[in-house]
Amino acid sequence: MQIIEVNTAALEKTFLNMVNTIYASDKNYIRPLDIMIQDTFNPLKNNLLLNGYAVRYIVVRDQKCVGRVAAFINPKKAFGFEQPTGGIGFFECENNQEAANLLFDASKKWLQNKGMEAMDGPINFGENDNFWGCLIEGFTPPAFGMAYNPNYYQNLFESYGFAAYYNQITNHLDLSKEFPERFWRISERIISKPGLTFKHFTWKDSDRFIDNFIEIYNDAWQFHENFTPIQKSSIKNLIEKTRSFLMPELIWYAYFNDEPIGFLVMFPDANQIIKHLHGKLNWWAKLKFVYYRQTKAMTRTRVTVFGIKTHFQRMGIESGIFHQLRDVVKRNPQFTEMELSWVGDFNPKMRALLEAMGASLGKKHITYRILFNQKQVARSAIIPTNSKQLGKNQDNN
Image (cartoon, rainbow, N blue to C red):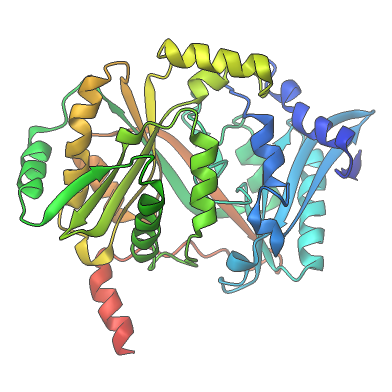
C-alpha cells in the first residue's frame, strides 16, 4: 500500500469519490455535497487557511484508493491545550487496520513536523456543527452536517491508540407528541417576565442578528475548554451556505430590556433532499433541490446551536425560546421530528434540559484524542453548572 498526498485535481476527485466504495451497500449513508468538502480546503472559502495549515492523503492498494484522511492545524485552537494539538478529519477507510494506520501515521508525522504533540479526530477544519466525531451508536440517516461512518471505524481508531476525549449525544424529539405539561407551565411563566422579549431572525435585519449572535455566543461559551471567540465571517459563511433552505422563523433570539441574551438556531434537514443529489450541485441537482423543497420533503429539523449568556443561565430562558417554536411547528405540520445535535458530555446543563423536554437518545459520537508521547488522555473538562459563580471567582483571582 502507498500513501499519496492529494495535490492535483485528479487526486482530489479520487479523494471525494472513494466514498462510493465504502458506502456502496449502506442505505443510510447520505453523501455530503462535494462543494462543502472542497471549500474546506479552499483558502478563498475557509478563512482558517489564512493562518492555518491542511493536507490531504489517500492510501492506494493495487491502484485502487482504499482510504483517505485530512490533517490540519487551527492556530487559534491548537495552542490552547496543555499540549499543541492538531486534528484529522474526513477519514474514510475500508475495514483494514493496516490501511488506517498508514493514514494515521502520515497525519501524525505531518502534525509533528509542524510542532504538534497530539491530534483529535475525526473532526472538521472549521466549526464543530459539521462533520464532527466518530459515530458509534444510532446508525440511521444523518442530518445535514452530521458525521456518519461504518460501525467498524470505532475499532480502527481505538486499535491505533486513540482514546475518547468526549462523547457527543444527539437527541430526537417526536414533534407529533406534546412536550411534558410541566415544561409548558415553566415556559409560560418565563415568557411573562417583565422586560423579556423574543424575536426570530429576519433577512432585512440579518447584520444586526449576526452581531447579536456573536455577542451571546462569546459570552455563553467563555467557560468552555479552549474557548476562542467566533468570527463574524464564520456566521456569514454559514448563512450563505444554508440560504437555500434556511427558515427565518426557526431561528430565535431572547432579549432582556433589549439586550440580546440567548438564541436557538435550527434548520430544516436539507439532507432529506441532498440524499437525491449524490454529492453534486450542478444545474440539474439545483433543479431537483428546488423540486423536493417545494414538495416539503424536509420533515425533520436540526438544532445546531443553542446559547444563553452566563448571567441569564439557570433562569429558564431556554424554555421561553422553545415556547416561541410551538406555534411555528403547528404552522408547519410537515415537520414531525426535531434533532438536537449535538451536546457534549461535558455540558450537564444542556443534557438536563433535553431530559426535561422528554427527548430520546438518537445517536452517539466520540471525539478521540491521541497524545504522541503516549501519556494517558485526560477527558474534556466539564462546563460548570454555575458559570456565573465561576466568572466571579475568576475575577477575584
